[in-house]
Image (cartoon, rainbow, N blue to C red):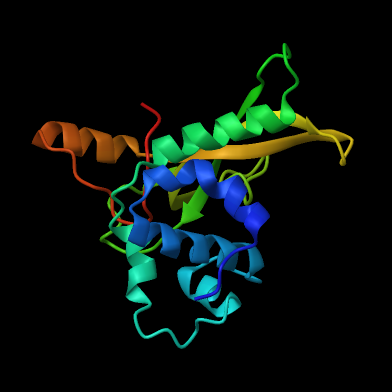
Length: 187
């Protein structure tokens, strides 16, 4: 199996303890493939980008995301620490931005979706609703030296459940796992 460049392995080293040794190998391949993949960032396109389109056991790479035994909150915590270390000078305030985006999804099995105002299709005079999953993204707002401007560097994305989903799961007394993409929460 191909390995990543030494510098990239050094940068990723703080994340290694969060994964088992077997899974860590797959995580590195997926990360390299995601960086190199043109177009959509899917597991299949990541594998194609690193030359593993004929991999017989591609399901192992899907399991890194679908059967996660690692904590996305811990990954986010480490990522934020690395971003602060690299881009926030000592003594400067930490500025965090919050953004939300809608992921339009179809299907009855996607339980956490809700009806939201579509900011892309709506205007001041025209209100458009859409059925979607709402994702909240936390970003570190920092000046990137070579860009001479402030960038929003994302470190955590979380699924914000719809009111209907929250009400139903509270009423039933059990917290269902939302269908759709892997999610994490802030708290």
